[in-house]
Image (cartoon, rainbow, N blue to C red; front, side, top):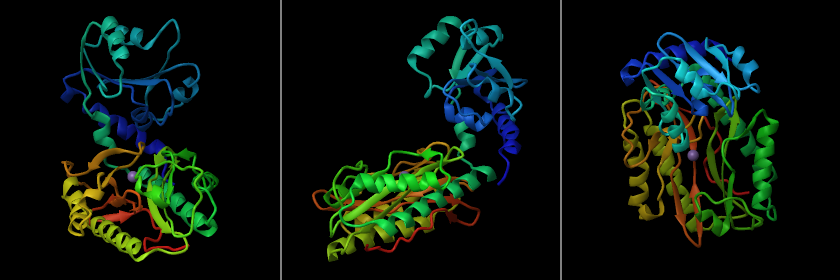
Length: 359
Ligand SMILES: [Mn+2]
């Protein structure tokens, strides 16, 4: 496995080189995922102050040892009741401070404005713009996270049977992922069966899996902070002609869209492929969500792959391809893979079978 330590100083340098363009002389990084990206430290109370000269990591007693050992080249500063974040900012002689406006609360902003006399501006998407292109370390983490998802899928297929509840299905997936090295879940597991499968984001209930049900499982884990995300729909016992027909439309839409992933296309180009196939078959109104999204330290991050997605796909981006058809009162089908954009096209990271599996 590649060493994270090699990447941290490069990421920090890249972030600092963007400070001037913001019209600021310092940037306050508060979003936990951005703190992790630049420092390698996961914490519930940690801030970075970046300046073109020196950069600082500020945290409390609970995380100070990790902060002191950071491999990014950040200077550690301990916060306590006598010296809070605002005191440190005040003492730094900053003229214009850029903040992560989508992360901080109004309360935080009021407090900052009352103590800091300089100008405050937006850090825009300084760190997110770096995070959208995955480095080799991140690619390895995403590959492993998806591999764990694949292991969980084979596991569930080997034990799935009528009478199991949706909650049991979710628990088995989750336990298997933890057993195989995941440190947690990337989001609450979706396991919906029968008529419930028409709810794209339904949670698992006590409903038992019955003969003739479709079962949609959308789940993911965290591996070294990176998320996995995959969806498969399987049939229990048998699938009617109608179920097979819908499954095949989604299967085709998913495959054609995945194959179109390549640098130079916009996110909306990708979305349009899945949407047009489903629309052509007459189910346009039954595919009401976007085709995909970026994945990394967050389960949903840039680029958003939907009808209005303007992002130009570039080598190193990670996107899901997850079209679906949902027929309320009947059933639903969704198939999802995670892919990396490569120089020549794409590398799919989830390898579980996508032909209809009947268990
Ligand atoms: Mn997804």
